[in-house]
Length: 234
Ligand SMILES: Nc1ncnc2c1ncn2[C@@H]1O[C@H](COP(=O)(O)OP(=O)(O)O)[C@@H](O)[C@H]1O
Ligand SMILES: [Mg+2]
Image (cartoon, rainbow, N blue to C red; front, side, top):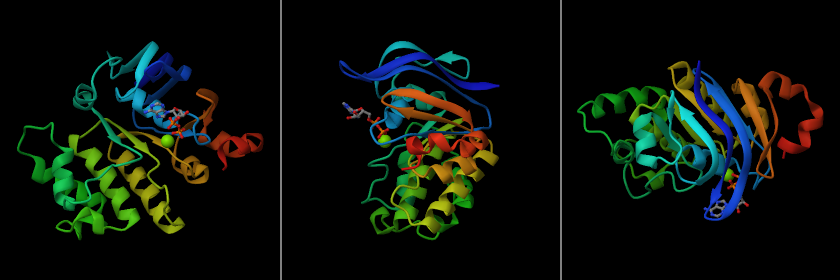
């Protein structure tokens, strides 16, 4: 079943067009990767879904409703979580405070329970729950950023370069977390610089270049297409 769908979307910032004619979808239960060189428009695509870019054309449907033009708060409430590429944690707050801040839109009393549930996925940061986020390692910070985005119990998680700057071991640990999030029932759209990791854990992938989708296939097929290598193996 389709969870998210973009039809002929063109978007950017102000008057600047970054993405053109984007057609993509994510089915319930999938991990979908967005690959492509720097400046291709991957982050802008996530921003477009989350209401942080200007949409000039096309429509965006999530869970059957039209979310084009809606504010990020409304989109978050509709069930989309975003772990951005930059400034994704508050360094001077503790791990636990960061998680509470991730739930700022929630009014219910289950926050404590949810934090414990999220710590089951990330025991590495549970141990650091009372430490300031700035004292975490790079890998732990990325875990915290992803964990924060889960605090609103999203149906769809948008994740921008969760393994950026991490050593291979920390990167594969994080990739395992993304898989676990999927297994727990959250659909994931992930931007990833490391195409090998991305294609290993995702079901399908889109390759972007110059603001357009230049390839789309199952991850298994893309792994075999050597001619696409220069596009997504950096
Ligand atoms: N907030 C912004 N305002 C204006 N232009 C932007 C903004 N963010 C990104 N861009 C431009 O959009 C293009 C795509 O950038 P981005 O989506 O960040 O690519 P990627 O994530 O694939 O590296 C680049 O040319 C970049 O300069
Ligand atoms: Mg980016």
